[in-house]
Length: 95
Image (cartoon, rainbow, N blue to C red):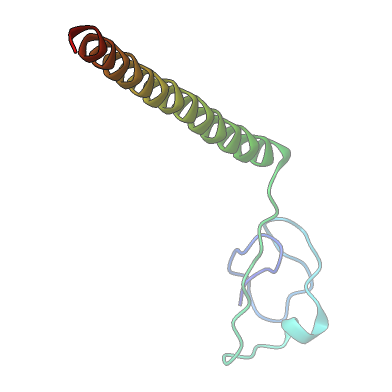
C-alpha cells in the first residue's frame, strides 16, 4: 500500500504516513491487494517556473528563427527582382 500524498510504501492499517505525516483515509487503511493507489505529486513553484521558462525559451527561439527565415526569403526575393529588372532593362536598351 502507498501513501496518497508522497507515494512511499506504508504498512497496512496505519493512520499516518511515516514519511510525510499525512493522514491515511480509513478506506485505504484496510489492506486491499486489488487496488493500486497512485500518488500525485504537486508541482512546486520552482518546477512551474522552470516549465514557463522552458516554454518561453522555445517560443523565443521560434520567433527568432521565423524572423530570420522571413529576412532571408525577403532578401532572396528582392535579389531576384533586382536581377530580373536589370535583365529587362538591358533587353530594353539593347532592343
